[in-house]
Image (tube, rainbow, N blue to C red):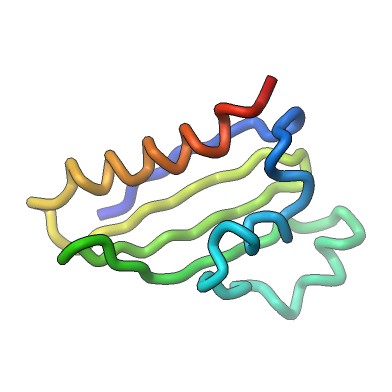
Length: 102
């Protein structure tokens, strides 16, 4: 089960490029390393992803930093009973990266 949300990142003080996400999520890996040149040229989005654990809950997280400086966030969980906790994780991520947007 996957949840998706996005932020418009054009005025965010924390994130000026896709590489800034690596500062906050140091364990995520680049999902499209072979397309980094296209990202640098403004042709393709930058993708990060990984698996993390909070308490006993395991999640997948994917961040796609788009050419228009918006970011898509995907939080996945394989246990439907923990869906509410996954929503909380996604809302927290959105809050952290949108609170400094103005």
